Every structure is written in C-alpha cells, then in structure tokens.
Image (cartoon, rainbow, N blue to C red; front, side, top):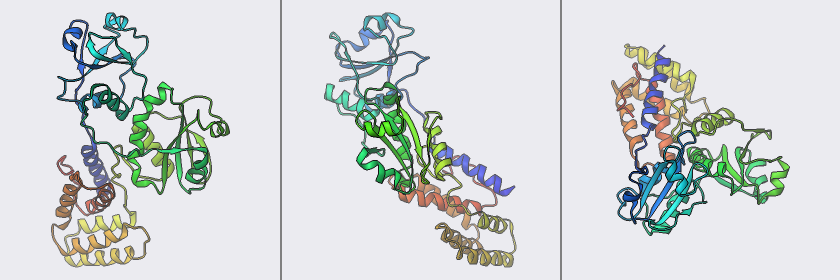
Length: 364
C-alpha cells in the first residue's frame, strides 16, 4: 500500500511540475475590427476553422512577439464564422497563413513555409525586421540520408523512430513542431533511441526500400532489426508513450524522467520497511542488509540507494529534508538536462524512504 501511495504521489507532483499553461498572445479579430485594428501595421494572420484547428505553435508565435504590436501584429481569424473576411482574402483551406506587409493597405502574401516555431518566427522577423524573444535551441531531430541511414539506424544498436516526409506536405509541416518536441524529450537517451526524419523526395532509394507511398510515413526500427509501421496518434504524449514502451525508456512529456526511473524493486521494499520502522536497532539491520544488496547490483542507481540507506538510518528527518532539497534543485532552470536526470533519479529514490509520499503541489 505504501509503495502504491508513493508512486501515485510522485506521479502527481511530477505532472504538476511538468505542466505548462498556454497563454493567449494572439489577437482574435472579426470583420468588425479587422481593418481598424491592423490599419497599416505589418501583420501575420492565420485564417482557421474551429473544427480544423489552429497552426499548433501559433500561440507560441504570439508570445514570441509579445509587446511589439506597434511594429508587427500576430493575428488569428475564425474564417468559418467570418466568411466575409475569408472570401475577401481568397481563403480556401484551413489553416491558411497570410502576411500583410502594409497592414490592410497592401496586398496579402501567402505563407507557404514550415509550420514550426523557428520557421514562422524567422519569416516574421525577415519580413518585419522585428526580432522575436525566442531563445533558439539546437534541433534534436536527426536528419538521415541514404549514406547515414545504415550507421545511424541499422547498425547503431539503438532503436529509432523515423519519419519519412516531403517538404511540400502540409501534414508533415504540421507534425514538425511536435516531432521536434519529442526529439527534445529524448535528447538524454541518445544512446538508446534516435528520433529522426528522412526527406523521402530526396532520398528516393530509401523511400522505395521501405515502401513509402504517402507522407508523413513513420516507422519504428527496433534495436533487434525488426521494423514496424507507426500507426498511433500524432500528439507528443502518443509518441512518448510509444517510444517508452518500445525502447524501455522512462520519459514524460517535456523530457522529465518518470517517477519510476532509477527505482529498484528489491531495494524499494527495504526502503519501505525502513520508513515504517521506529526501532533504531531494526533500522540499522535493514540498512546494512540493503547496502550489502546494493553493492551486488550493476544498476547505476544502486549507489544512491546505498548512500540513502546509510543517511536515513542515522539521521532522523533526513528523507524529508533531502526530498525537498532535490525538488528545489530540479526547479532551477540553469540545471542542464544531464544533471536534471541525476537529480530526478535521486528524488525518485529518496521519496520511497518517506512514510508519507509527497503530495503538495509545491514539492516540485
């Protein structure tokens, strides 16, 4: 029962820590206020329909140019309701993105570039001269060619999720930002799994070899050499769940490790016994047994268990104090991803030593 409570509590706090709330940073305009709001200000406008959805990163684009609406506007129009505006600007599909270089005083230009945040923000900056607030990250998706496919996938000893795409494909463009997020989530698992893509229109031999007939086509290449089509959902959560299942990784959406990462069942049982015990002599016996067991295990996390058993048995309140300390360190945005993984594993382990699992949303 204690173990179950610990897992549930840890999962709740991790999800609370990982959750983000998207802010509304895009001007929603109608035919009543479109002309007077935009005026002669350069504007990037998304014409969408609620049943079709938005360009997935458009809110992030609005955030990137927040506070600069005297120089450039990021706008959205529900063209299903505002059909007059849609007709006026020749909107025939959703979402349609258009650039208004001189506001409503000039001709609108169709946007046909990528739908990822970097492509969109770069376009707006190029057209308006206004810099975004985006801090660029190094792309995590591995770009494969016919020359690199064998070494990076087939003979790498790793599993790989590979998207075969076409540069002109709208569905591929919409998938790109999500796919990059997935790659960022698994950047610390690069020795285990590869998140990659192939331009099937350029690498025609590869596309033919794997029977690519539509875009995007996603295939999973297991470390043992088997290949299967990916037919799951296209959300970040869908991909993360699938990769964890297939590759044995333990990631959450956003890149944090699962609350179960680094945990060792045999040592968890002893940690729970230690947490329940109020007898100092019994605590020392349990601790000695656990430390001896940890020394025989090859798992990297066994060393953390050994240290924690020694500290918890000797110092009252150590488990709660160390849990809080690690949680605070994990909040530090300057911590690199490798160190964050280390802190997360240590936090997962020390949490088992608490008789009551952490439940406050402020814990993490």
